Length: 471
Image (tube, rainbow, N blue to C red; front, side, top):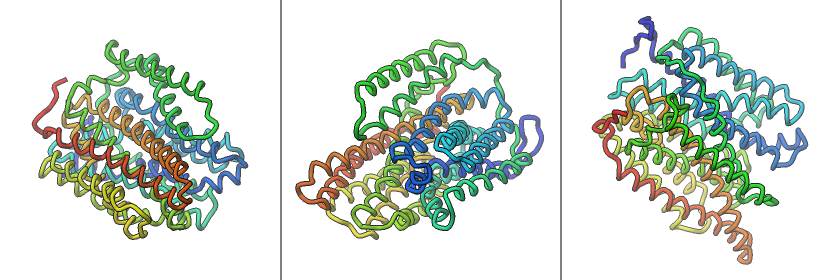
């Protein structure tokens, strides 16, 4: 890859410095999404609130992210990229500083919302930019680096927070975020250039209102399995949210300048790519949530030890991501993603088939197998989806894929948690340990079925280099 490239004004810039600055900022933001779960007990005690309240630091973050994602293509089209990137870094940094100063839970929640707004814009945007500045033949390798952000940050977030919390207070975690983002903010003034063509348009506020339906749907999904839920009210929220999303979808096909160009969904390969990235993300996020629970409730590990047990899988994921991108460029996306989905299917099949209480080493190896499979699927799927679209639709395509992935991951965690609770409860007559093992096995069987569906999606793919939409 050429180190020297030119921006839209014809001025040369260092492309790898650009990419690494972009990845450093987005990686840090991504870690903030998954890092707080380790700190929940500490935060509950500090603010004097129950677990159901503290959970909003993650749930609320995710809801705000999802509603910002469809807005990201409009922002990319209407703002010079250096302005957008530096503004989102500043927004995240200010939000993190508010959290650091927080003396009450609502104050901390304000900071989390600001962080989530920045992350929701940057997740689709950084992928769009990296795809835009990279020739199609080299996109697999470059997007493998992007996979370090998506996959590795999700996996290492709880690990990093566990280490930081072991040696400092919860505020120390946010000091780390602030320090890194501030450095990236300063570096970005030099390295981030204007590489995305602008196409000024009016923001369609009615579409933004319609997109709020995604928040409602995810909110209701996250209530599944919780005690004392008013399902009459939740049902009403779900109906209204579905109507809003239906209106959002309808409007995108009936306005001259849609907020999110959903015509990308008319491309078959793109649809499969979106479904595959969602399927692989479900496997990854369920592993990072369910396996630590297994380590603690079945194997009796401490929260810190259970978090550190995720390290081998996270390392493998980080090592494989850049390699699988280059592999996709060489042998094709279909073969690469069939390999990845095969690894994920095998991992869940082993868990579902062997049954009983498993040693920690076996669980770590299976987690690594599933996470390694994710490296062969998630970013290659994003790249394949982009290669199936004309360049001007890539920001819309990545926004659609990122939104699908977030909704799929949230649904996967909710389903896993619900199945675990219900099956465990129904088997209590066998004893607490047998009941827990039955609950976990039911989760493993469920996600084996999901991964088999993903394998079928991969088998249906056509090589993206041969089928380019002219939409």
